[in-house]
Amino acid sequence: MNRARTTRTPRTYDRSRGGVTKGSGAPRRSKGYDRRPAAPQGEFALPVTTTPALPAVEAFADLALPAPLLAALGHEGVTVPFPIQGATLPNSLAGRDVLGRGRTGSGKTLAFGLALLARTAGRRAAPRQPLALVLVPTRELAQQVTDALTPYARSVRLKLATVVGGMSIGRQAGALRAGAEVVVATPGRLKDLIDRGDCRLDDVAITVLDEADQ
Image (cartoon, rainbow, N blue to C red; front, top):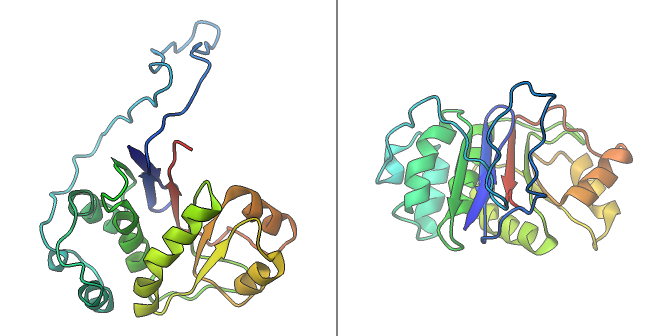
């Protein structure tokens, strides 16, 4: 099962391909104050939902998506939302934080990707200052996410930059200097570029943690 998570305004979370987070299993205690039950070993504690979810939709046309995105979906042969897309998109498009979990192939990438692109469309990134960030654990997954989102990003004239280790950091820095609205990154290479002054996250309004358990 997979889980994804977003932070700031709005947050989007995607958790992919199963696996759980390993922990010591020993709960930390704050000197007897505010003691809370520990999550089962090897599992995340489920978040507490305080706001009822918006109703799911059965068609992309029922969502507040830009017309070019709807046209791109049709061109790519994506006609009916997967369940995770129909359930999460009304909420993420409204700017709510979302935590989603599903098996590989369940449609998680577009579940967070369409909302990220729709909410970023019409804006332009300054050099070195992306507007949205997708953080992934591996180079392979970064490429998969980039490939999946590229036709939709192109439809709303947003530029993607893939920032991963094992590839030219100079080219990646150049893509950021050219003003990439969306960055798909692994943590280590993103930190390298931040340390070099080639990337700043001050303008990031949407963050996705893909495979958050990793």
